[in-house]
Amino acid sequence: MNLNDLTVIDTEKIALDDLFFSDKNKASLLQIIKEHQYIDELKKYNLKVDNKILLHGSSGCGKTTTAKAIANTLDKKIIIINLSTVIDARIGETSKNLKAIFDKAIRERAVLFLDEFDQIGKSRDSDDKDVGEMRRLVNTIIQLIDYFPSDSLLICATNHYEIIDSALLRRFQLRLKYEMPTEKQLDIYYDKILNEFPQQFQNIERRYSISYAEALDYIHTAMKKQIIASLDIQQ
View 1 (cartoon, rainbow, N blue to C red):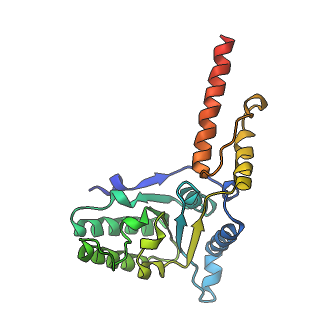
View 2 (cartoon, rainbow, N blue to C red; view 1 turned 90 degrees about the horizontal axis):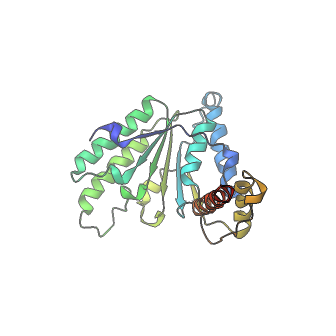
View 3 (cartoon, rainbow, N blue to C red; view 1 turned 30 degrees about the horizontal axis):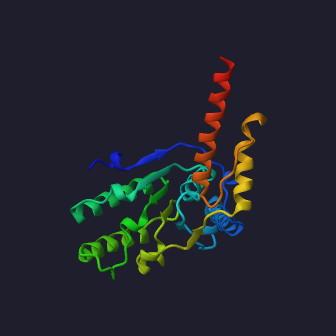
């Protein structure tokens, strides 16, 4: 498989201030960003920056946008990989593809974002019928992570934290949990989205117990219906 078929170079510019997550998560991410901004100064004191982050929790709550915002803040390219597309029937091919992806990120000093990390990080104690092959794959990814240089940044995301191999989990200096937003958090998010549209279109019934991604899709769908309806009336 061609490396270009596996990688997505994302150019979307997302600011950290545009993200909605807990104050604790934001403080932790700001600390890592500051470390990378002052990486040369910290090296003078033989201090290594943290450069391996695991984002886990509910789907649609900002893990991918967090990775994009970090890359944008650090003015780094981001390479996005969905690991379900990397898995090959031959374990050797999967390991080869992973090494090529890591090598590319290292050459370009990029942010490497591995989504669906559980696809390759399953516990080696799993009852999976292919547990032997999975162990070899987990060992490969452990080695790649261990030798990942500090001037690049590895961010992995999973919705299934509980099945990740414990040896892999220990490699991440920062592990942040993303949870479904509360009604108050969603109201703040709704206000931000709706304020981008004319007042006459802002009276949309709000839904709760959903993720930020679901809320955004819901508002955009409802907004398009309102705008089209108003245009039909004018004709």
